[in-house]
Image (cartoon, rainbow, N blue to C red):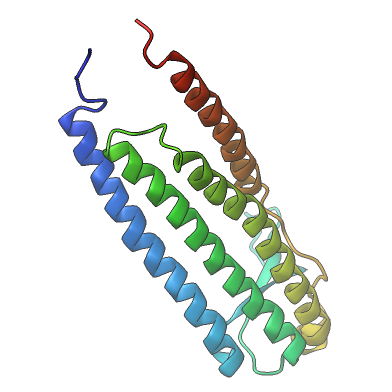
Length: 200
């Protein structure tokens, strides 16, 4: 029977560093998001919001064109509805980070123990994948509605240059569904491992 470790000492040390970095950075990011959501409701003027805009910027003769596509606004004039949408987006983003953190942490911990096909690995990947895909989708959607509401409320205050819309980043959603596919590959590997146990 082959008793060689699944990972070299260097790989194990590197994986452990990644594990610690994932935990501390992710925990800080998630905690910061939860706190920001709470304090945004208490004092929204302390948290600027970025809104879509359209306009031109004065430029010299050497520049063909210069346009503005977004503007950052810091104000206390937002309605409670807009404030709660932005706070909800902060909360959902923090929850997304926490889900990815927990899921990836469990996977790395099992790899470090030399059990990459443990029964807890697939649920952990599913947790990280669903958090990334659906959490990103919900966060961007809720924040987008907040941006549209804020644009409607503040448009006259900034010269009518705001656009009622928002941008959408599809990359984290696609990455999340990619992880979902990976979870099914892990499940197939686990079944193959069980079927081949005891075979020579």
